Length: 545
Image (cartoon, rainbow, N blue to C red; front, top):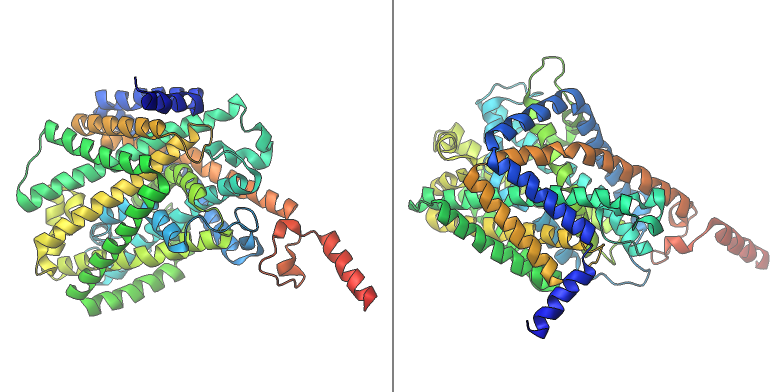
């Protein structure tokens, strides 16, 4: 073995937390293997469990997410937003645009291209609650987009940010390890985060994270293959599925191995330019005036009915729509919150809490809402006017093809834009999976922000292998139900983050004088200010006067 390889794997052995890595990987293989062996049986069991949860505990999902939104809005506008995550004189490691591009690409990007042209169509055909217009009518179109905004707007980012800011604060202000169990720091102290009993949360997050990444990768592989089949008649067997999955695995593994600055940052920036380009083209060639009117009406409904939509449970009439959509989404976002939160903590050093929350709530919504209005609105327009039967295509091929008949209808070069759309799918997938793979590597090395390359490669290979197994054996739907199922304990974890961070800030920053006592020095570090020292200084100044 060469000295270089010896050094590589030596670093892997020395820096990897054997308990978290070994037990987590073993449990993941066992869980996903069991699903792959008996996908139908496990899918039925998990569906039954999920149905029970949303019927009996749906209120817990809804209220946890609503409180996370309220907490993040307070961080955005309140005095705690001035707190810098890092030393007072630290410059940001990444510019705001670079930070935002990585945040957006890692968070919801693969979902945007997967569900963007399709989700509003499902709401259009099913008729969500709180909307007076009937299904498949012109009057329900704004409401269909409005509910899409609810599911992809500030709410999921509130879950991510609540966990991310909590971890980032203790990592960058108190030198805590960058791992999920750091959320317990307000209650047990940073010095106790290495206790073995604390590692149970990290081990659980390994299973959830690998499962979530495998589902995302599986969906995008399916979308990519279906797109090639729909547009160019290319069919794939098991070998083709494995080869495509391996190719994507190599792509995101290389990106993760290169690290944040050389890999993830560059691809994320490329994603944003391609994303914006496709959006502008679709807007210009689409029903422009219709989309402008639709966007204003849908956004107005989203703002005015946000609280009602967020807490509505449909208890009175017993329908299952909220459970199948809103509660499902909330559980899904909760399950991804720890690993996206880890990634947020990795890239946010030098920024204030207000900047981070602004990027997560305002910035991402400003990018995703136009996408859903233009893509979803164009699909609704084409369906409602009879220009294209996108619902018929979706029922035949699956939800993943909704964008392709839309491009054929709108664009003069439909195949070209379909190819660019597939490219966006792939590059968004790479940045989503490599960021979560990096998160896995960080918290299986005890919280190292720059984990050894061998650890990142190991997780990339494992994710690719398990995804291929699930696609071939038909276990993706069951794994998706499992990931959603664990959203319940993560919803409770989000509550711990809110309580713990509030306790910490109230105890450590009892005055934040910049807000309460008229001190207006924006560069002052709040932690260096105490009420006693401030009042003593003011008294001395008054005496000298």
